[in-house]
Length: 290
Image (cartoon, rainbow, N blue to C red):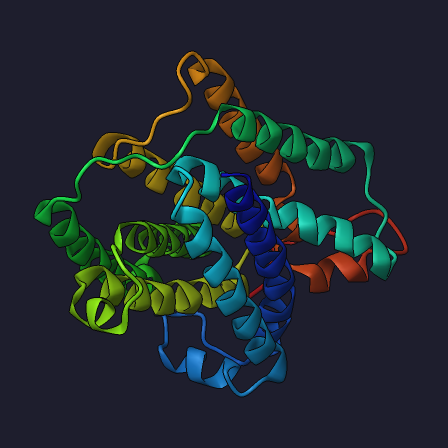
């Protein structure tokens, strides 16, 4: 089971670096302030940084998928939240000075993941029902409609709303990856979770790019973390039989809460372009005037 933790942390590192590339590309891409425009994804795909980010995302997803074969969802998704800690530490090499609060948050992520690793046991063995697969299809449809309608929300709510929808979409990807029974080509083509994972991933990238472009990166990233961790963790516990080791439930709860809270404290590193620009002084506000 230890190699599952290694894969989860490797995925966090890949996702952390990928977010650096993608956020820079998103800010450099022209786009409107109204409804979400699906053409935004096409425009950012023309930037090499975004393409590199996608390549790293694919590597991260492969590592995440491997981790999901042996670990509960609540452990893997909390580990993925550590990608913000990876970005924060990487910012040191660009001249950004981390404050005590941020170093404490990085330490909090590490301690939380340590507690989760201590309390984790193998993934749950509850059978996957047809209702869960149908629920994932319904979730993809609802999230797609909600994301494309986000432009109708008040201006100040668009970035956090899109961030949350992107996080929930990433959650669909994680759940889909967990319930795929086999990676054999024939099984993948006939498994509904394969398609909910692919569509959920595409929607997550579109809505995350839109959120980064439209407003407060700190708020959008915080909502992303909540959506991609809490939602899959609940599904794993309620529908897939995920449980901590006997007697370690308090340790697992404390580790999960600490890792997520610390990741939220690092949410400003969801957009390194602004972070780097503040290297000479105190951190700048991430509120966009868009």
